[in-house]
Length: 210
Image (cartoon, rainbow, N blue to C red):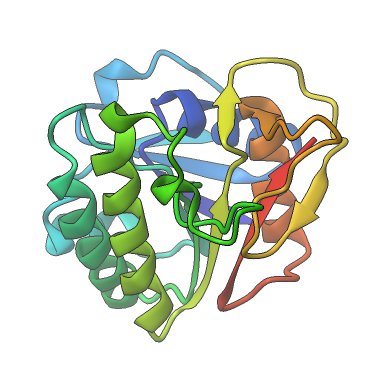
């Protein structure tokens, strides 16, 4: 499959790119600055595009079978996430691609207490604006006419090992017996490419955790 990955140089995007290449896909890394990505592979191309410019995205996306967005704003610029969601939907549509997967946020998942994770007392205040921006962006994706899938990580996601073993949920936070919710960035990428290869959650959200 020929995939365009937006934000391919970030922590999550890089691992999604590596997983896609591992499985034999052709990948175009869509980046504001292609020089920021030093990964080289015979099936990897790099395309310059501005995530805030739908025409720019359209050109980079044309001819692909699917788009994966791993865009993440800088700290303090959370409002970019909402604008980017609109642009990504528009650019994908204009580029003639119907399949869109989004590496999203976990804050809007329902915690065991019955409220969104981002509204629980223990949720870190410093990342609450980012969580709310992700939740607002999710609403934009839900309303679009593309074959979208929104993938929420566990409450804690960080670089680690690729095991290929995890549990899947829908709109509720997945926790272990101790109440912890974790996933490695590598296994999160596995889950996203699994969905690309074998769609199970078209026009819906799912989440993964150990």
